Image 1 (cartoon, rainbow, N blue to C red):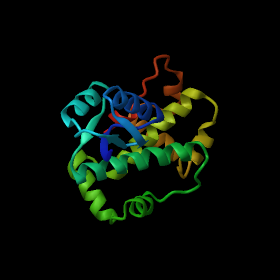
Image 2: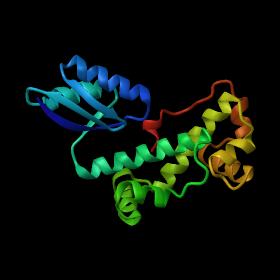
Image 3: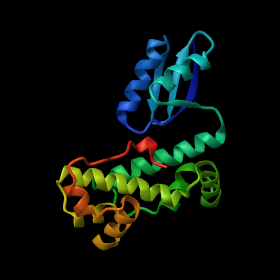
Length: 191
């Protein structure tokens, strides 16, 4: 039995892992391991990439076939997971520059240039957009004060968070909280 690793775009949460695993198993593949952005499968036959990609596309995912695309997807996953951990109080202070360099073993300049040329925005802007989505989520949950949210997500002050929130959403955090039809965006659609 052979093992093959496939790289998958738009996997951003544990439900994504579950869906991808179930879909691959429906196709008759044995999933050896699966993490965000990557699945290792065992098969006795040659992988049917077109069929795998078709099924993944139907579920909002996509096979990644180039090294550059895999790096960009890893950047996104690292940012999303880091912001999630920050908001849950698992991380104190994070330097995304150092964190990305250390995790991907590539210079930040290279990563930044690659990301910007492919995605049309900087890594910094992507981080801000992800943080604002997390702020929206935490505001909706109404379990933390704005001060606690600012602290957990590494903002220097509530004013800094509020200013950035308004710049991105056009609303103040308090106005956002008062709106009945709160609109959050799926993490894989933020760009």
